Image 1 (cartoon, one colour):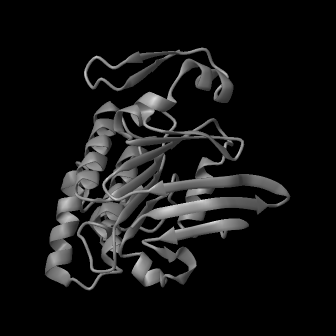
Image 2 (image 1 turned 90 degrees about the vertical axis):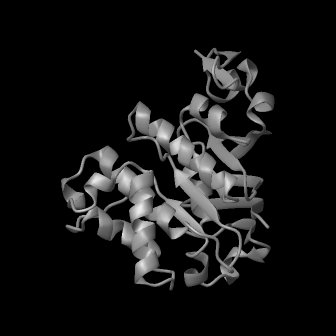
Image 3 (image 1 turned 120 degrees about the vertical axis):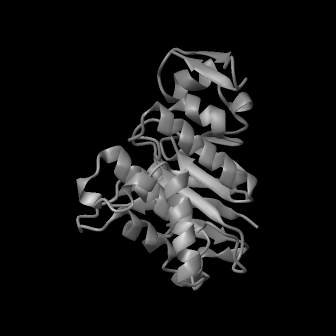
Length: 257
């Protein structure tokens, strides 16, 4: 059971944003999508989450075409964290995270426990009664992350769970970047399929089982970070001179420019 794209293309406003892309997000694994600005990374996520219909090819979720899923069912197993979230209502952090429990019928007591656990997981328990509109950018991002985690916190009978995130660490300091990677690893170990767009190649190399490099709307390379990352690839896709070394702590590839 996977979240799978097979030969998908996306044509919008006279432009080919995606061309013949195939990939699979597998439960228990982390897939990171990287590439230069305008490569099609966010467009790929929007197709995989159903926000944009494909122009060609097919997307399936747990063995069924994505379009055949009822939104309420899909919301119980797919949590999506967009790059930017607009919320101008004076909701408290706890009320924002509670939105993630809307698709479920687990009852108030269980939902309240999950909300507390999700806030604690993202180091945001102290924010639970603070209004969202009064938070910093990083605090807002952590609360939104807690909302998405609360949405897929537990296994359901509907099917395998997936966590999809677009630049989840962009507003985080170093400590909370590490926290985010730890959460991703924890959910992956629990059987969740994780797909996220990252700009930082070193963060991607540290956390990903599968690295997908997108360039010009196509997949330039995909596979394990150790297999994919090379000076030649970075020069071709990112147009930078770089050396690939090895991280002294994690042993993962380290990009030095």
